[in-house]
Length: 241
Image (cartoon, rainbow, N blue to C red; front, side, top):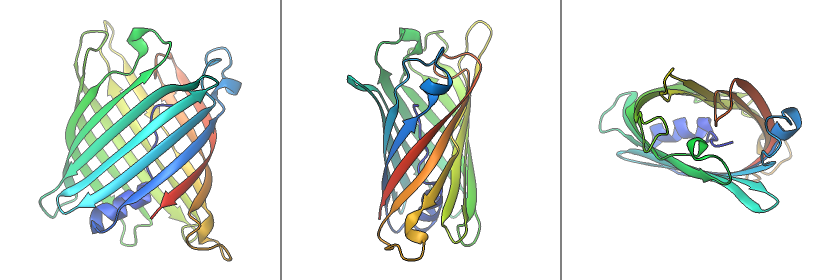
C-alpha cells in the first residue's frame, strides 16, 4: 500500500480559502494477505499515514508519508510532496510533484523509483464544499527506470462527497500511468475511502476529531503484480485542526 489520499473535502475547501492548514494521522489494518495468500503472503498487515496540507497566497503544499510494518519493523516507506501554484483567479493551477520510497527485500526492478511530475490541475467544488473533484494530467519522469524509458505520463483524479451533515465522507483518488517495456504497460491504482466522522454526531464533542472507516486498494499491474486486485482495510483517522 504505497499511497493514501488526504481528506479531499478539506483539501478543496482549504485550497480555495487559503486560510488554515490541516493534518491527519491514519492507521490501516490490511486484508491483502488474507484474501490473496498465494500472491501476497508477505504483505504487511499495518500501514500508517501522516498527511499535511498548508495553503498560502501562492497556492498550496501537500505531503504525506506512508510506512508499512511487519514483525521486524518498517517494511517499506513511501512519501510524496505536491505543490500547486496559482497566481490568478481560475480553477486551473500548475502542479509540481515528487514521489519516492523504498521497499525491503524485493527485486530491484520492483522497488520504488524517484519520480518527478509536472502538470495542470483543474479543481471544481460545489458552493458549500459538500462535493468536488480534481483532474491532473502530468508528464512523469521516472529516474533509473528498469526498462530504460524515463519519459511517461500520468493522469490523476480525486473526488470527495459528504453525506448526512458531514457524518459520512466518501473520497478517493485514481492514478493511471504508463511504464514502457517491450510491450508497453498501463498501471492503475485507486483507493476509495469511506469515513464515519464521530464529532458530527449528537452528544460527541466537536473537537473529538476521530473518524472510523475503510479503504479499498483497487489496482491493475501495480507494484510488480499482474492483473487486478481489490484489497480492503479497516482504519482510524485523527484530524488535527
